[in-house]
Length: 202
Image (cartoon, rainbow, N blue to C red; front, side, top):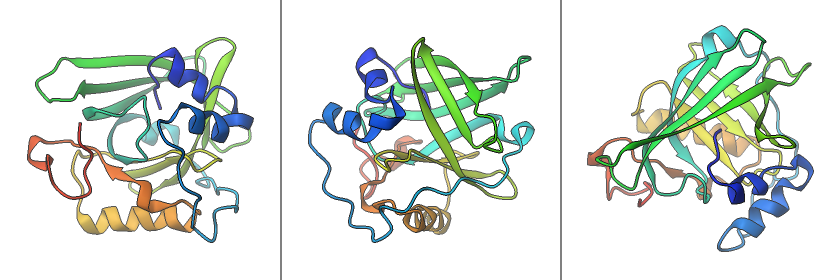
């Protein structure tokens, strides 16, 4: 995912210290993860087809953190590059849908041996962060992204709106991976969602 601002980048720059740095950059320390599988390492998606994965993904939900808090109508655009890397562009409106669409672009490298499921993004050398593709459905309609610390995570979809049943199913997969799913909040993708239970307040 794309992160805006040096403060946010530093929070995710060193994979070994991701959990501690995210906590330090948060306004409040998150409670202990109550999931009985919290200490179990994350399991990657078995084989990600990059040709099918690239394109637009809407941010359906995430664990709120400073870099994306307050954005509505947000989505990512991925594009394959000739050198084997991936262009990652994040788009979103700050606080209201009428606000100008903001963009941040990063180049991503795929970690060898990860079956295209571990992506390393760098806003500038030597800072970088890794994020992990944990799940993609067979039709490439939904995807789950996470970090080893389980402090942050994203639910992505090809459509800006998904059914409650699909959302519950995707949260269940995060639960199976040891996440505290009570921390996930849905991202506003339409003005009609404003004020509904479970959605973030911009």
